[in-house]
Image 1 (spheres, rainbow, N blue to C red):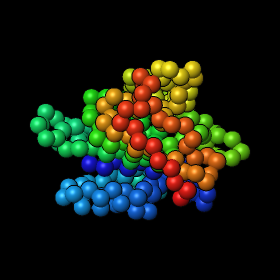
Image 2 (image 1 turned 90 degrees about the horizontal axis):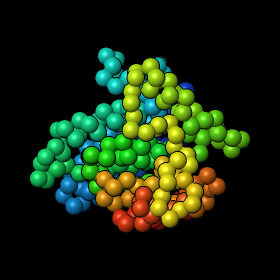
Image 3 (image 1 turned 135 degrees about the vertical axis):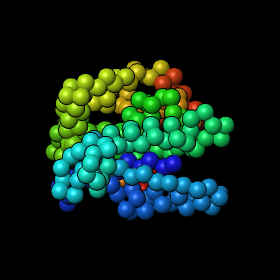
Length: 228
């Protein structure tokens, strides 16, 4: 199962967030690789969004009566629960899970993996994970998403008790051996077997911070760089 979370739109953005990792073929490259090893796959795609969205842009919760055209983090959380219940469970040979994220999508996938520490993640693939502008309005370089207040409002209205304040993604996580707290996209929880992190080399907002385990090691973390 591949859960793919797209990143933040920078230019010519639509009225509400749209996924692009499937639309632009990024997820398909992973499907093709797995297919070459004789493995079957299913892909679930998500926009850089907290809620699902209908075709008219209205935000809705998972399992709403109307069918959304774009899916957000709450749907991804619900989908991972279904995968856990139906295809992982206590099977001796459970279905594998790959989380693929780009930009803010990496914030969503790392949040998902951290919240669901009971679900084994085979691969966590990060394409320039960056929490800049995720919580608030951002700055002159980029318009932010302001997910912080949106998540806080949902949490209060629905009475949700998270394991930690998921709206706080920047400079929050203490890593052994490092003086400064790390962003959520730069820490890898213990339920993740392998983390593949890709740094772009040609754009200022691309990820420049290497990922770490909470114990300060880089066990199972592979870092690459591309100019694309």
